Image (cartoon, rainbow, N blue to C red; front, side, top):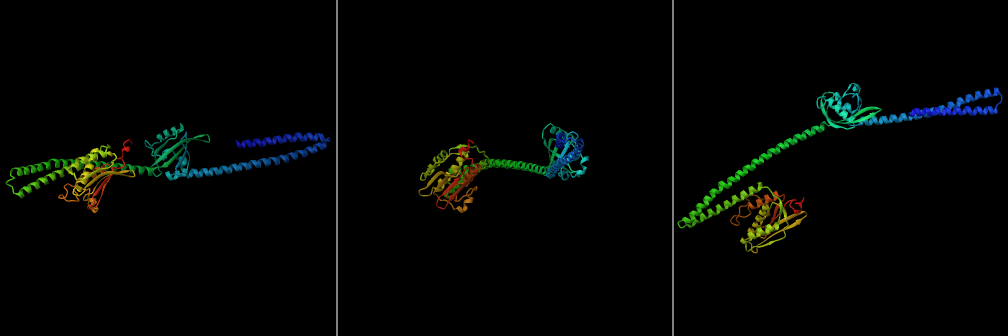
Length: 453
C-alpha cells in the first residue's frame, strides 16, 4: 500500500509539472516570437529542457523513494531479528500451526532441544510425532483443544509428550488462536513439567507413606490405650480385693485377739493396716494418673478464684495453725474438673509441707507477664534443694520421706499432666528451709477472651 501511494505521488507530480511546462512555455513563446523558424528552433530547445528537468525531478523523487524503502527494509530486518531472538530465546517450545490443515508453519529453537527434531524435518512433522498418541493423549484430543482455541478460548492443559528417541515426558500446553497475514493460526506453547510431575509424585508417595505411618501409629496408640485400660482394670479389681482382705483380716485379728497379742504383735498389725491404706491410696493415685492421660479436655470458662477458695476451705480445717491468704485469680479457659485437681494438689502440698513450720503461711495468687497469666501457690515450709527439681514432677518422686510427710509422690505428676494437656507449663522455685513456690500457665488459648474467637 505504501509503494502504491509513492508511485501515485510521483506520477501526479510528473503530470502536473509537464502540463504546467507545456502550457506556460507555449503561451510565452507565441507572445514573444513571431518568426516560425525561430519558434520551431526554440520549441526544440524547450523540449530538451523539459526532458532534462523532468529527468532530474524523477531522479530526485525515485532516489528519495528508494532511500525510504531501504530504511523501511532495514527497520523490517531489525524488527525480524529482534523477533527471532525473542522467539528462539523463549524457554518454552513454540509451535505455529495452520488452524485448518494442522500443518506446522513455524517452531522456535527450543523445539529441537525438547523433542530432538531438527528444523529441516519440519515439513514432514505432525502433532502425532510430538505426542504419545494414545488416549487420552491422542491426536483426536488435540483436535478438540484446537477447536476450543478457534472458538476464542485459551485452553491450558497437561499432556504427555514424546521425544524423537521415544521417551515420554510431561508437558504443559497453552493454546491461542491468531490471525497471521490473513491466515488462521493456532499458537501453541509447550513447557516441560516432567521434573515438577516427578516431584508431585514423590510428594504424593511421601504423603501416602506418612498417612500409613500415622495410621500405624494411631493403631499402636489405640492398642497401648487398650492395654492401659486393661491394666487399670486389673489394678482396680485384682489388687484392691487382696488389699481389702488383708486389711479386714488384720482388723479382725486386732479386734478379736487383741488381749492375746503382745505389744509388738499389735504394733505389727497397725503397721500392716497403715501400709495397706497407703497401698490403696497409691493405687487410687495411679488410676487417676492413668485416667487423666486418656480423658478428653472439655474447655469452658473456669472461675479460678472460686475453685481455689473451695479447695482452701475444704483443707484448711486440717491445718488450723496455718495462715491462708487468697489473692486475685483471673478466670481461665480449661477443663474445670482437671484444673480443680491441680489447685487441690498444689494447695494440699503447700499446707502439708508448711505444717511443721512456726507461723506457717500459704498464699494463692496470680500475676501477668506479657500475654501470660501465671498462677502460683507459695508456702514458707521446708522447701527443697533446686538441684533435684528435675525429679520433682516424676511419678513416685519424693523430696522427703514418708515418715516426715505422708504421700504417694503422684500428686505433682498428675498436676503436670493436666497443665501440659492444656498447653501450659508448670515449674517450682524453692530453697531448703525457705519454702517453695509452684507456678503454672495454661497456654495461649486459656484466656477468656479467646472463647469468643
